[in-house]
Length: 403
Figure 1 (tube, rainbow, N blue to C red):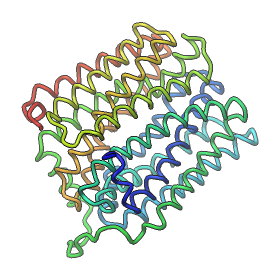
Figure 2 (figure 1 turned 180 degrees about the vertical axis):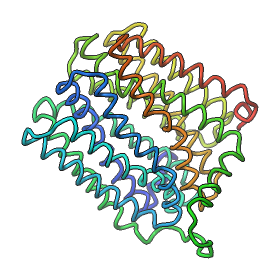
Figure 3 (figure 1 turned 60 degrees about the vertical axis):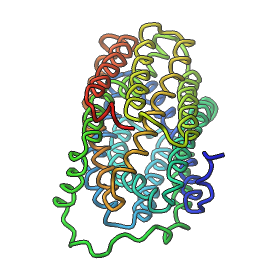
């Protein structure tokens, strides 16, 4: 199958296996952390604050992380980040197991985790074209999305089971081990990256950031999408991350098993979206397809708030997963086509910075709103505003005409 062509590349296969394991661990951690905060504090504001402490350092250091991804060996950056995050999560697991874990520990760990993650993500986005032949990149991107979503299916389900049987410390510990496994998978491909130009001028962070920004603002497709994503992510990611546990426990009167199931169903939808994109050799009308897929995802989240029930939550989460995956995969493929390899780390960091820059405010605001107006109304407003915001992009010809 065309979808699996990238597995012919040994370097990509190793990276793919490591990231799949790590993402399974992320699924465990997300469920365990949400449920721990919910049971420890019962506060939507505390849930939002945890997410703010995670995303804020990531936003602040993403641009520097992008420069480092274009200056330093990308695999080494990824190994260091995986190892540090693994140790950090294992420390959290030990504190939880000894009944010493407090909310301020979570805040501190989230700050450090977000800082280290800021260096991993641009390096990971930029290393793909380094280690994968150009003709295999569409397959590699689809498999990367597919593995993430398959892990998203298993991770939350496993996480809910582990939390129910062994408690949150066990889930935290397994996530820590997954980071260490991911780092070990990167070690064999240390010398396999394609050589980049060695005649670059001496490092200058400001100049190199300006080069990355110049690429983004030189392409309307890039800057329009990144700008709209800054607002769209507030309305999409904040309800899912902050309000969903409270919707399930307080409004639907369900347990951690349903929370895990919803995350898994969302990922099943994303798998379907990834497979659909990966099977198309040459996708046409990519601009309109991307935006329409994201609009459908936003409307699905709005309906979750309008008709809150376990059944509707599962069906609409599936639809949202399909839409978001299709849009994200097309975006990744276009980004790799439009940006030169030696600039991809910086441009990827600008993309992630722009997409995440308003999330700290979104998490904080949604945490407060969930306590004031309830999770269903937060979903209804958030999804509707997301769809309306994304639809604005279709007014620009650069978006409509991207083929």
